[in-house]
Length: 438
Image (cartoon, rainbow, N blue to C red; front, side, top):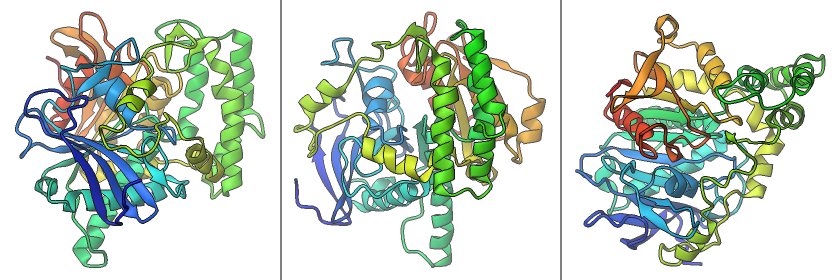
């Protein structure tokens, strides 16, 4: 392992891995947030006008899953090929017009390493904030300090995104009042794909989606009926989530997670892939990325062996019951603070399905909620092809994406290329526009 100087970056520049567009700068390495905690990052400059382009952070979920998933399977400068060993340059990469920073967090996830102390989204937020303070203070990246900052995240990002955004805003307030020293973060956008935010409103979605979705019924009526009883019974899932969110202890929330996932989430998927229901389990797509990442690890400066999901980190979160705690109040506060917010969902995903996410969105209580409730659905056209449906209200938008699984940018639909609909959504939101058709 390299010498860890707390408060500094260790950087490998222009490795030539993944981003092969001539003249586009990249850097990868570690931010040492303490002498025993190192957070891995991989940064790709925008292919156009990087000096003025916004900076978007990407976080995968888990909890415990690596953000290299988003990079190599979804929307990075390169995407994994079906051989699981090589990559191809991605024309629909999110760094076409935006500086992208992929971060493996909490410590222990992906290529990050060190003391695995984080077990809540709030603890994770503090470490990410510290990492960004180190990253933006580094002379290679300090030009980004005045640029707009965005948080993009997925899956457990329904917890991470609201918690991180709310924490960044509260730290900005403390910096302004002089009670904390640090760099103000120009948080402009929060976007969450297929996110678990509000379990009480989202868990009934599993029951509905299993019986009725755009593809096929997932399990028999009797399995659906049993799950419904597990939701409504006196000591069932609904009661347990409610107890958790009425000041419940870690063990109350943790047992709610265990009960609800055993009795509702797991049985209702049947033999289908939990991330993409048109396919039987296991769907080999998107292809595995572990061979590729282990092959390039030394060239990009990684110092630990990569794994997709860290079980220790997952267990830390399971033991606090963070999963079942409601992140919607944080999300509402961020929306009300004027941060442009996008919630998006692939309609072929079960594990965080659109039925539950749309129920969460309908339950939001924000300055834009009355307007949102008056909106009818609009078709999201991409180059004239219907690719989903959306609503806009103020600086809030919601998009349901046709034909996409859990990792929305990994999928294609109709005549569109892989990730093409996702790139249009990303580019519009990052340009401070509401969603619209092309």
